[in-house]
Length: 64
Image (cartoon, rainbow, N blue to C red; front, side, top):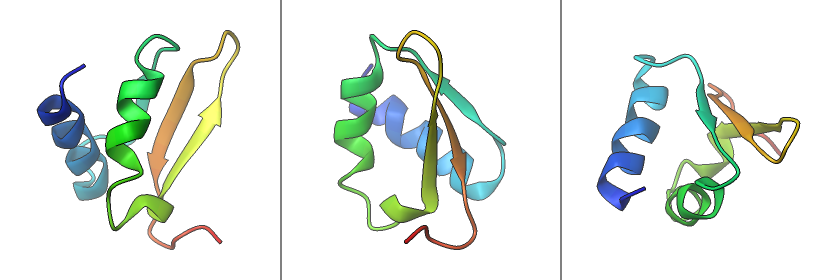
């Protein structure tokens, strides 16, 4: 995945245009590298799925 498309997806999660986003195991490292650079990183929650995939949600309150 390209950084621009990942940023767009993360912004859509933040803005409520997407309620969740499913990241495959193959895309995970690219997705995470962009995610951890964001100021609102702690607002994203990833739930691990079977096979190494991750389902991301945006939280109104940052996780601790």
